[in-house]
Length: 97
Image (tube, rainbow, N blue to C red):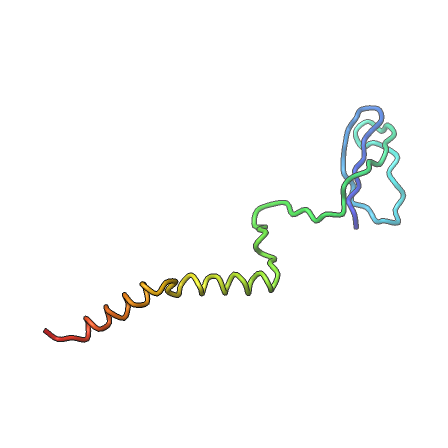
């Protein structure tokens, strides 16, 4: 069910009302009992209010796969020098003095 916005013609009080789509628009202001008009609002978008909602909570599967691939690539040696350096270290440890 959508939330509709209203404004009073007499006291300019603005308020929201959670109503069924089939429900008739409100006529009376809850503050001064004057006449009200339903406002045209953006609507349509999901609005999360409060703590705990992050854009990363609902990532697509493709995004998650690409992020995993990037993380694995970051852990692996990226240059030939690093690979050779690790091989030399391994040989030094194997020698006894």
